[in-house]
Image (cartoon, rainbow, N blue to C red; front, side):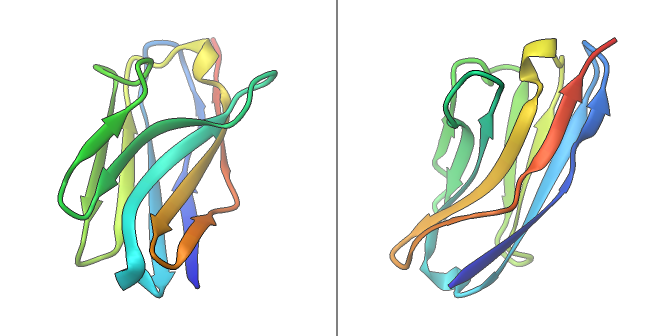
Length: 115
């Protein structure tokens, strides 16, 4: 089992920045990819960005050039720095751990972008 606890998020203005952080505990040595997904109103949950143990990065097209994912293996954390925010980035953001033990999700943290 892997437990994921998210922090950060909240409200931001268009063009502004927000940072999300996720701390993984439990059987973290089975995790290969740590990442962030989001569910925006009217759409299915979608990948935002993910990073593997080897540092392989995956970004959704909408995230490229605006969002940066980083991982601290010692602290078992994964952060998502979001810049140049847009109103359409509003949604519920979930931390995800994917590995040999299964697929785990955090509770989600709300991001709201509005002026």
